[in-house]
Length: 325
Image (cartoon, rainbow, N blue to C red; front, side):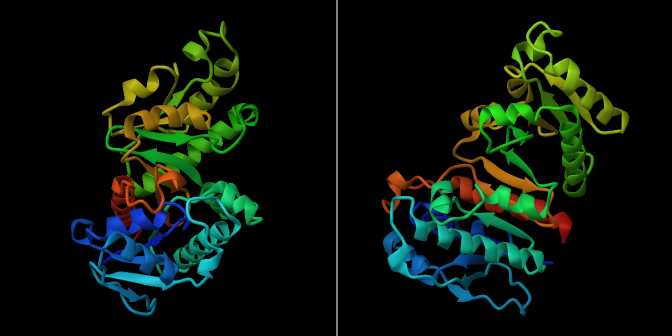
């Protein structure tokens, strides 16, 4: 069965449309699937002209079966006058959210098996009056088991918490939420990659607390959660010193590091895989992937955006969605 993959344009004032169109310009080298772009035809046409790219993009008819190698468009109209190139803006936020919400609706209805989201601006969403900080927070409201993970060829990382101030994130490092997180992550990974992953939990403090000398969270919260998860049959180890667990996990495709807050995981991940890393939301009935970079307003419209992370996000969306077909 041919998978149908949705791709959103992201913030139209950033590099999202550019990296989407560049990635699709080599559709013959992408996995065999039908690709449905969710966005404005005006934004797509302007992007194609600016890049000098020709793509055979046809309107999407959800009632027809998917065709391999086809590119479709779910046109979502908005006024081009509301878009501000190279900057966060209310119109940009409303547009990017409408692309995303429409793609999620299609995924919930079974029309597409995965959603690949180009980068949005959290500031644009805030200016638009939206209550969510990003894609994952929106999905978490519908799917409480949603988990933010990051994938590259050499390292995989899952985040216990993500877009929170550090003080709030540290309050999440408790036995009960960590145990629930490990259960949820393990369940989802077993659905898409059965028997493949071991979870390696990072410690919170230097040297993973040094047996309580450098902090008590490992002994009081983290280790008990790991111990109980293992007793339930989950493939979990740790806590490991956070300054070495990422290095020790490089090149081990069967290991996913569980980071306890955003920057603990993302500094290490982006040092290794900034140009080709992929953000993956697990725990929903469909797969959602995204390039591991932002809107890059400073280079928007200059034709300089690197599409490699978008290409990898598309490839991974197809790969992870196949077991769900």
